[in-house]
Length: 248
Image (cartoon, rainbow, N blue to C red; front, top):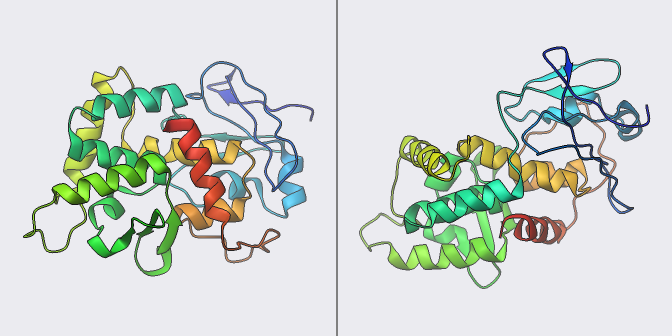
């Protein structure tokens, strides 16, 4: 199979392809915006020792359909283009508390509940490092410079009586609704989960190894998979740079 295809409702859809793996040159094929379903050629999955569904979904909240040639992501969740994400960020900037949250999702790949669970001790301003998640999904990652700057500013605005919260306390529901409203105002059809999905997609498209994506975004890995690319210290610096270049 020389290229990639995406099929939606029986018709040829728009797609962009990814090359998974560290190093090497990136190969891309684009047609239209990134909001369309996308597919991965099956030889990539075979070389990495993974099933196609594992490569595409990585147990993310995406539903995938597997065939002998392609995997098509569920089109009910869109992948936004960098221009759309930046438009949403610009709209969210009207409200500083919302802006910091949108930046954390887009520029650090944080989940809504992870954003609202942040404590003052979770952010190391000197190293631009942020601890996200709890339990098995806990990780400490380098965040994009734009996100680090906003985190520092947001922490300075939080009153002393907020029980150690890094940001002014919001409920996850308020975050979801506020992001949806900002997206509408920016002319973008998306929510907070599409923002995180778009962050993962842009890193994936850059050729980042699957294991690094799992570690950075807190994605649980298939138990039976054999890791071909070890996760070493400093892997997160490149991911932060990709997110900064795309959305910062």
